[in-house]
Length: 128
Image (cartoon, rainbow, N blue to C red; front, side):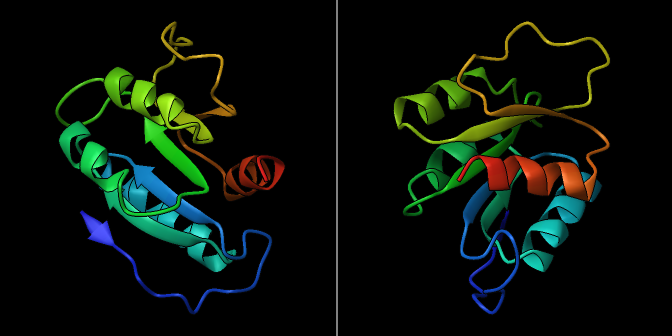
C-alpha cells in the first residue's frame, strides 16, 4: 500500500481531488498515480487487496474511487457495494476483454486497460 500525503500538487484539471486507487497491477497503479499527481489530484492511497481497500475507505473524505474488478485477493464486488453504500463516485478498471456483467449502474465509467491519461482525466473532470 502506498499512502501519499504530499499536497504540493495543487494545480491542474484535477486540483484538490482526493482519489483512492484500488489496483493490484503495480505498473498500472504507478501510471494512474503519476497521471493523477501531474494533473493536480491528491492520490490518498493505493492498495492491491480488498481487505486493504475496506480499511482505506475510512481515510477521510474521498472525491472519487478508481477500482479494479479483479484484485490480488478476490473480485471487487464487496468493495464496490461498500463504495455505493457510502455514496462515493467511482469508476471501474478492467483488463478483461469481454465486458464484465458485474459492473453496477452506479459506476461513472468503465476504464479498460491500458488506460490513457486523457481518458482518466476526462472521467474525473466529468464526475465533479
